Length: 297
Image 1 (cartoon, rainbow, N blue to C red):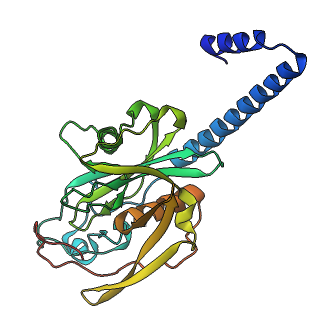
Image 2: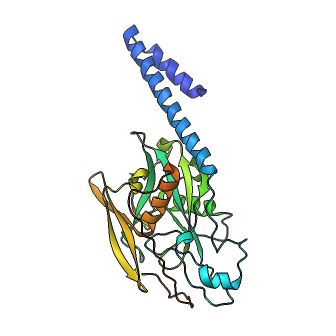
Image 3: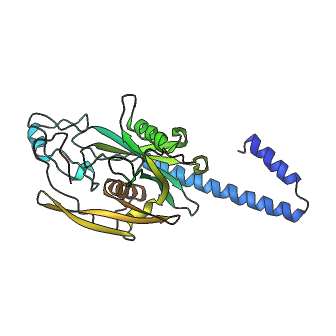
């Protein structure tokens, strides 16, 4: 249903036409615009419904998990490093035999919208070159959980507002993916949200944190185009990290590591198919003792 303001705007426009042909063209344009908007809303609504049904696999760090210490010793940890693999695929050792490893929590926002070409796109940032960690790298909006955050969605949307000025009321949070772990063993929860009306979002980057805001087709992370991989080895185990090259407005961006790993997983869930390339997840375990200086490199 049209709002009163839009009705007045349309009536005002109609009264200004001086010929039937001009009026006819206006009506066709309005009808096309409404139909396109309707299709967009239907597609995003269907995607929202699909993603609400998604249930991430359980991990040994879940609060309601009840693992025997022997099982914990053998299989706990499922973490991700800078290479970007979900907890459910990568084993890690425990802090002590009688104590679970409990990493600190963070969340990132995978904000999806439909571009002019009909493709699903995701909002990404380029971190400020002045930051002490991961300076100049591409990242999803997000950060560490704070005491006042009621959920991972609160953390992700709060950080997105602080970093790029994205109003949380514009984002329809539909699901969370399984946790990932950063290079410094920070547990990262990817939160998927739908931005139905992209025109209402005008990026206002926090210059102390964000250098640029840009948008990338989500499906790109399932394709073997503009992608390369590098083999790494740690503790005797070989694995691949994936690097995606992307260009927008004559600016080149490199998306890799944890961000690439999260987006590969998100694209697999959204499009319900695996990537067209070998992921080769690691199978290594961390040392028994994990402290604040322990990293995965």
